[in-house]
Length: 303
Image (tube, rainbow, N blue to C red; front, top):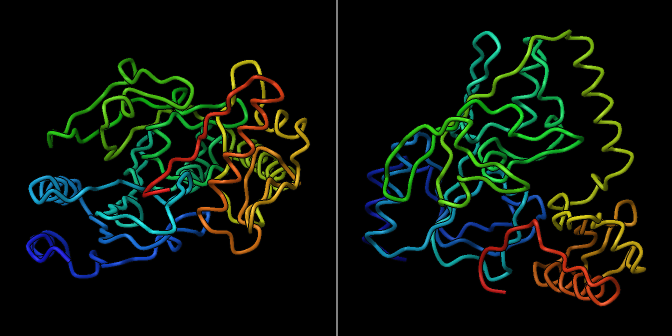
């Protein structure tokens, strides 16, 4: 352990905000991943900025996560600091037709507040298993809706430690990308602008989307959601299914029999199992159709 780094962390964070050799399987929806040297949970943007400055000065690598819903962590873990923006930074406020939420707020929680206040336009995100911060970074979307449709502005922290607001027109949001990801900014909070709606109709739409997810997605198994990005002109799940890979398994990892776009942790899979399965699936699809599947899931650590 880097004693100097640890002592500096103790001056920034409360004791319960610092964990040493924390198993990352506890913090990813895949339920795999070895230990991170440091696992840190700041409660404010200022704490976050101080941690990052400390990491840089002490030459400790760092990585930002939300609830780990789009992440595959190596079985060997991560030699550095994982900084989680989640439950310690998840405040949600509603003012008329705008919702201001911190980056760690779950999309499902934001959608629930929208419903409570009769605001429509965020139903599409009610079942996405991620945080608002990650959704802004990658312009998360589902069922015809995307974050770019509802965002008014995003407050970010730059690598230089500056906090500033990016208005909607400057977010450069595209398919699974944004100016935030391009510049390596860290989301602190975002303002979502919605429309007034009928509570009953909003609830019906959310229930409809929930039922569609339950019937079509393997929610009963740990996964990271859609494993591959949608190739232009194709659907990843159909390409995988047409390659005869439904139910294909490597160790405890499997291409879901319910939806081929999902790789699941079916039976105590390791990160290595999942990574190898993804490699073989991508290779076979490329051989069969000449289409290169690009992972939507981020990797952390050595593979």
